[in-house]
Length: 379
Image 1 (cartoon, rainbow, N blue to C red):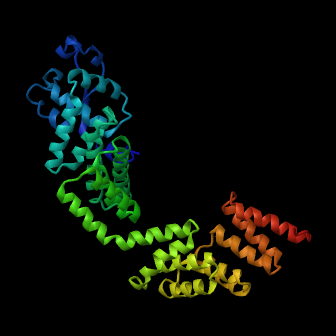
Image 2 (cartoon, rainbow, N blue to C red):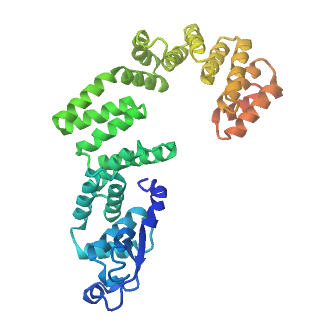
Image 3 (cartoon, rainbow, N blue to C red):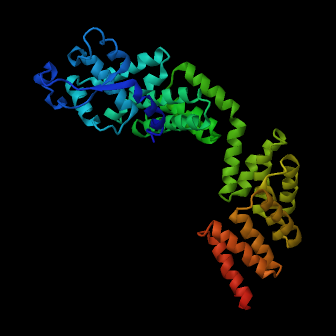
């Protein structure tokens, strides 16, 4: 998951050229003979400084330039052929290489060069996937760069990579408050309000500085209603309609025209068998959002539940106009036709449902029921 953005970074490989050290190079003769014949990455802009002075003389290349080149290629392409040799050299030359990369990455980030900072932190994670500074700052670079892209796919990939880095941090370092702090904002953006609340409460409990804690508390106060909404619809989706409605109904006074809220209230009433109340809410939704297929599907279910199959057929067909390849709607319509004794139509819709979702258990059960009805052996 942390390499999801590499397809964009690889385009920057052109910033690097490769040289080979001479057999008699001092570096090889001293203690790094395994570098013999290995292409050494150097940043183009750094190599160009040597041209005109000593030509492309590899002996003039400073070790720190080699190190930077290795860091860049590791950050750009984690599957590069000679990565293992570069890693071996970096640790051998400087046992504290991880601290060096972290320090240089932070300097780049502070200068506003987030792209190169990201490359450094990605390389750091290739050296040590558990490096706490690498995970934190790689995530921060990904999120800060992601919001700047106009391409929605790039933006999504960078943000998802940031989330992955922060979530790995919470798994590997469960007492690291900053990881929870940053994650909370991403959960809000994904409308996972309850998850954001739990995450931020964990951050506060672990200990944040006063400014960040105050920021979180202000955000949580603003999100109180959204959190209650999420708690409510989660209860309803888990078949606890009474408890779910207790959460959702008070919100109706504040959000009278929020069709998502009205939909889950309707679903709760339908689960309780209060079909008339469910229908009233669903009809309100149609006025607010007339192209929502789930609303018509629910209306079809409600009318079928009270034996009004004519209206059930009408609304389920309407749902299919907006979402013709929905196996659930097709199956519901087939059940209506089974009740009406129109077995050929029922079979047609069940076959279509099965072609879309061949593993759907309800469709399979309806097929068996239809066979029994057609043969006159209903048990």
